[in-house]
Image (tube, rainbow, N blue to C red; front, side, top):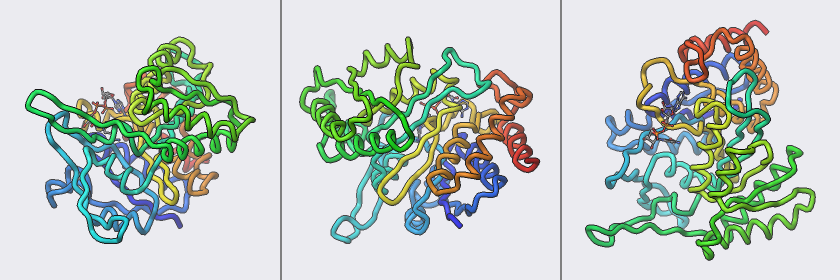
Length: 352
Ligand code: NAD
């Protein structure tokens, strides 16, 4: 039995994680969820969105299913965590968001985001099938910034060879394992010659150990342009943390939007599964969010946990519901609510 820590998240998080949980439970997978108090609900009750009990649960399970969590724009909001440091002594560390705190504290060094066309999900493109590998631990995205004076702010972009090689090795290993052919490295090494230059060089060095996989590189702005013109020509994308964040949403837009883009954050011995999208405050609590991205993240979790048969059953049930075109969420052109869409998938799982 796999135990999974369930972080429901904020906004649409509780709705889409409840959907994913119901589908996993109906699939017959040997999974038991441990729901923890977290996010805004925990902040109101305990003063922090990440109480110690969240980490206690994850230490037991090493598997997390996470809904999106709220982070205010601007201001000085930080998420503080008090946990043992490398020397074993309790240390206080702080992060710009709950998601970043979890990724960093749990050593989840890569975000893997598969982006592909789904049958009967309308989009501007067909034949899109991308595997995005986003470095998850450094770069500007860790939010190491400060006010220099009242009118000047600075952020530090830190890139290391170690983290760059680690994510590149993961990407090339993964591509080889799933029989894929080409990795395109996205960077801005023309201007950020030292930081992005180091990421590019490190990734190219690792690529030499994988002669069976073609390696290519693009300046990230040109990569965005090519992605919206001919996305079907790309296979794997390897990106630093910030570019990976931005390109993931762009890529979601190629195949039907944020409602269909799943993700996995993976480390050496722990993994956390969350959709690419955020808390969608504009639609929260209205039973209209598309739970598909969260359900597909749960499918990635089941595959990671060795529950391939249950993952295949969910994929088939989801595909069948989409194919029938009767119960489709609003973002994909239908009128079904989150619960009705989930119920349709659960019914397919129970009948097959
Ligand atoms: P968002 O992804 O929440 O929303 C962008 C747009 O996409 C909105 O119009 C929203 O309604 C729509 N959308 C998103 N998910 C959808 C779904 N499942 N079904 C249908 N429509 C969907 O991005 P945002 O507005 O920039 O961010 C809102 C909050 O989410 C912020 O606090 C942000 O920090 C947080 N966020 C969290 C995570 C995370 O926890 N991993 C990721 C991204 C954003």
